[in-house]
Image (cartoon, rainbow, N blue to C red; front, top):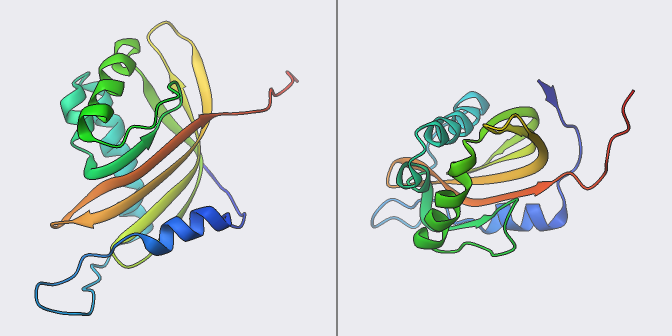
Length: 160
């Protein structure tokens, strides 16, 4: 697995900086729960494992209640749990399985980003390469997806 060494875009940094950290009840300072890149990388594995179940409710459970999904194969932004579930009802019919090709992980106070590229394989044998961004936030002691953006690669790579 390669690591991407590029600067995050201004938009990604803005999104990262405005994500709300978890605050301890009655305190004005955030209580930052320790984590590391290995734990954040495992969140993709958890999401990918939920795809294997073919159960849209199990996939949707990975997302925060106010989570946003900008999916690869739909023009509609999904901004509610019902809209996110609706997307996965359709997407899971193709039995997708993802594999990370490259990634960069950034960690803040109860928020983390996993940005990179992945390849999906479907039951018909087809594959799709895409770029992704997951922004995770810690909610009630659990890491959930606050923002998930996936888009197909814009450039066709010539065969060697």
